[in-house]
Image (cartoon, rainbow, N blue to C red; front, side, top):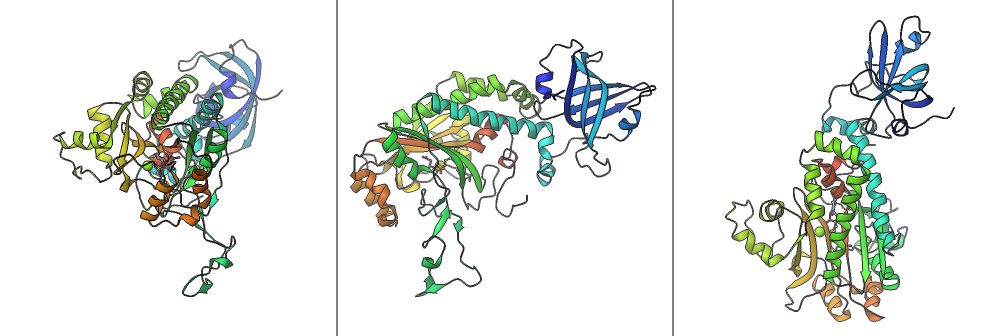
Length: 462
Ligand code: 4AD
Ligand code: MG
């Protein structure tokens, strides 16, 4: 008999049919007459109850070696449950132990563990309710993202992980080299990269955008969805050194079209989540944030606010709030500012556009005022920036000028500039931080808890 997943068993009627399943024991309760096992296989947030009538049962010996964490196979009949808490259970006829888990050593006993502690045993934390639910939500949201774009004619493009150009120009790249670090070849006082693997300096990508643009200017609608890397020295609850980014890029599209796409996209994937991951979302709503589902439903229902950076600054100045960093035109918005705007001023997601060019990347389209660029950031309550994007500079001379102003060498970006020489078109795109999204929809406080193995400053275990 082939084994069923617990999620499929729980959808069956308890009509006494014979069933076989596998799982890890969550709890064992025993009296003289009966033993109850709760088992989980991670296919759903729910456990399956196994009942073994004890007196004179040849399974007694097997049961005595089972404790929390043991892996077992169960055969039995699916019957209505007598107890409260579940509607069906398995009356066991046969139990096989794949592996035991010594009670004095297995760290995941029934008591609640702090997320900090669970980070230290990240190889076992997917066996807990919270981390199992996060893994399922991540998986479903990935599928939602692909479905949203595929349904709309976007082509999925695989942009390179190793790159020779710095997309954001922020110098936060991890270098990739095969040069011996203890004896680096030098030439005229600097490192001789001609001796390196690629014959030039190479890094891990911070964004697939630039290469993505080359495909958008051939296929019109594209998206990338892959890992990105940033050597940011920020030890916060919203930053990872390795994270996943979704980056759509659309030709013949201005910043308004870009904002509309971002809003439609977020609403689509949130609707998908509440529909397809209802059990896991109810869990997050009851255990992590009691307002979670209400908040997400409101986001789906209401139009995102849209204001310019200049409007945002004046709103902050007039707020009467005592900010640690007083808002000032020209400075980047701080997290306290983002929270005021989304949580107090509008109580919903806000798209902020037209930032000062000095605080944004070189590729953004310059506005006629020559002071601001056509950037658009989507901010959400509690978290702040979840999406960063822009209309791109489509004019060859203006783009080259921006590079020179920022000290970038246009020769390094010759292929990117070529797009503006041959059939240039208005085009736009954005990047959604996948872990920020998962953090937002699950209510989890720390981004390190929404990716299986977080990589951060001075953190590289597993
Ligand atoms: O705003 P960012 O830097 O934009 C870009 O990289 C553009 N090239 C995207 C584009 O237009 N195609 O990053 C985009 C998003 C942020 O809004 C944030 O959600 C996430 O990526 N992000 C991070 N997430 C986790 N850890 C970090 N260190 C992050 N840095 C950015
Ligand atoms: Mg940004």
